[in-house]
Length: 418
Image 1 (cartoon, helix red, strand yellow):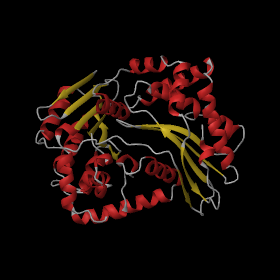
Image 2 (cartoon, one colour; image 1 turned 30 degrees about the horizontal axis):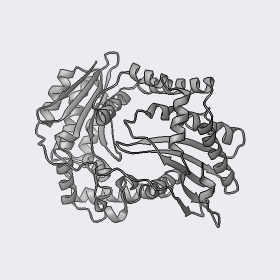
Image 3 (cartoon, helix red, strand yellow; image 1 turned 180 degrees about the vertical axis):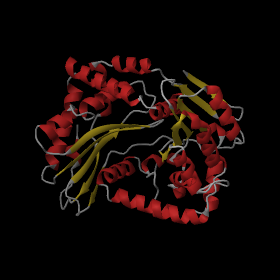
Image 4 (cartoon, one colour; image 1 turned 30 degrees about the vertical axis):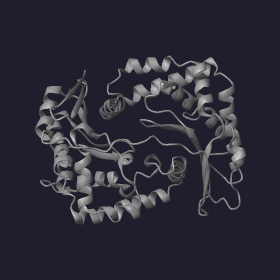
């Protein structure tokens, strides 16, 4: 049973009672992310995510860790482009401890300057790690070139240049402006009673007061271009091809999910079978869908040798052209739908996933969907829908980012025409 409640101060609480389990996942979700930063603040949301667990006015970082370990709980956090989350998973009998800790880090963050200096070094190493992870780096290069000058094109981590000057007052000011009730959603799923969860949330979060908060700003304008970066130490050439996708609430999103599954989103997909399995040209190749409130991205990633990169791009575009020109057969459409439905059902068997699903649906739709609703939407997709979505997404040519030991080779724009 799912219950939604808005507290007097504007904070939203959503719970799902799952009597057959013994765990509870509970999270504070902020409806703001790296998109809501000014250019000179890039990375501050992610920095705050790190810092809230580094001590509060009543708990040290060590005590927070000890309390979680003493109850066998799991604690995690992340920052995305349009939201952020701090969440805990505990036994049902320890829900009060979990809400107490979450309330403490939101209401009483310390932002100790000594801890800040230490944590900056940690984040700098995280930035360095992306530089050493080519599949992540090629996607960062793509987004920056595809949405130039827009926050959605910037790295969530920020840069050493943007993070270096940040001081305690900067974090405290940003935190106070953004972490206010209308931006906060608390979601919980597991063995719980809504009334009990509500009482705990009221006790620990009633002190939050409404303030003005940054809005989403303008939607990004995509630029179809080719960007390359030579990195001689890499053995493979890493490729990202992409085009503007669909926003989170677009009515055609389910057709896009099926399209992605058929093209490169599964082991039986066309890209995986025709480029890896039949020709052995790659180890990794896949497609993916990224969706935001007012924009989206449909991307394809592959890694291959420099000798094979032209052929991999050519074969990938051939598969895209075929999806635009020909309707799916019944068997392939059925397989894609069943894959999506099976993946969805299996993913929601865990309380953490159920809690995340509640939060994301509330953030983007202002409501929750039953599992049957989601399955029915997938089932309603037709071969005509998939062909139409493919034709609308891939109209002319794709954008590209390429990373590796390129030497003199560069992809030509005319080679990226669909």
